[in-house]
Length: 320
Image (cartoon, rainbow, N blue to C red):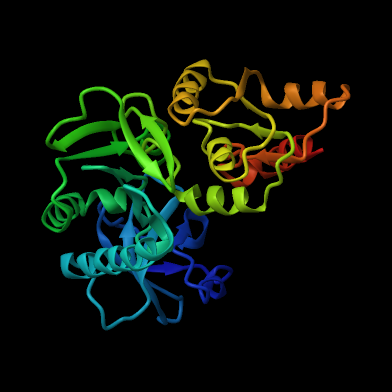
């Protein structure tokens, strides 16, 4: 089925951005079904791309193909997965020592709405779009065949469910969750994780290279780690440069309990502080305490265009 973009939006797709918002679409009299594959065209009939339609989301269409000769089918999905896996295997073996990896990184691998992380023998498949839920059986079967994990959990968080017209899920479709916490190694840092307590897929594996690179740039003076989560940046610094002191701040007491366990695993002396990060930094500004290195890793603050200005003010406050 064809969907037409309005004249104002027709020139916006040359960069192959996969998100087509509701305001860019001329809604047809008879709408496609949720999850239906559609062809996006200009008012003059020029072909733009192929994707998946969702009437319940502001992102009306997720585009996946810009080559009209391709077919958006299971074979194409599997080929994208294989490319993503091959890329990680090539670089991880050369540059990192770890037993946890992000195999698929959504738009970065041409698969908008799909994040796949592996922790030891278990896979976390996070679906952030209805478009990828359509292919869930294909995804699960392919990963089971290629990686032979002991377990696969499919997750759809509450925010995604609301935005995409889905039901929230946290379901083990293959095997079962590990019996309690488990440990992974990230470039010499031991981390104890828990699928039942972790955010999103369990750990921010997409920050792996940043943690390693940041540690290499740091000096040995005092370090402040703001919005520390499980202390990944702090522990990376400890393993490389051994700062004379580390202060790690987060607003969540549960997160800090896990972070303290990770510090003990790595024999790292870290002063953990539970506090609102904005208030804590304001108080520091009024004190004489200084740090050679400050890591700021705040959560996402802008989920829509309407929240951008508030987010900019928050980021500005955080950095000043």
